[in-house]
Amino acid sequence: MNDSVRRRTSAAGALVLVLAVAVLSACSSGGDDSSVAGSYLSPGKGAIVLAPDGRFAIVEANRTAATGTYSIDGNKITFTIGGQKAGTGTIEGDKLTDPDGNVFTKVAGTPSIPPS
Image 1: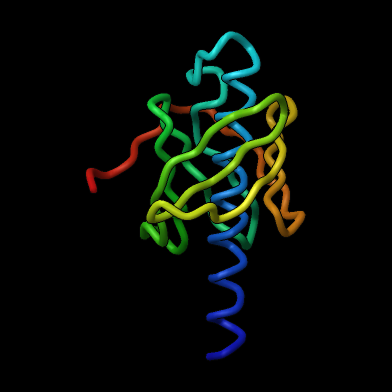
Image 2: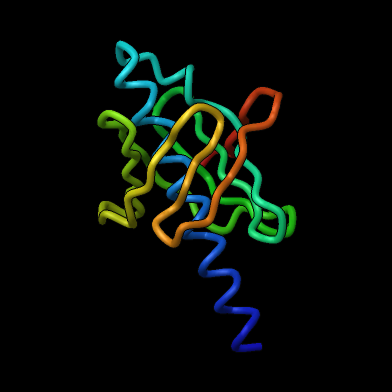
């Protein structure tokens, strides 16, 4: 159980970082978050969904594990949860790397984040 909790926490951190990286990339390209918006997947880690409006969600085992906002500065993406900085990652092309070094790859489709 402890290992399961650790994996979920790491996946949540990875998803948050991926979302943040996507937003940063959008801002660096003229502030259009739609260029980084989307779903980013990492086998065994889950998914990070970045909405064009600066919101993100971390999805694990088909459920939302965490939500918050992200911002982009160059190739850096910063995730905020509950008003506190949750981590910073990078985004380059279709790859989002979370603070723990987990790499997520953007997949086709329109991002959808459930209402808070």
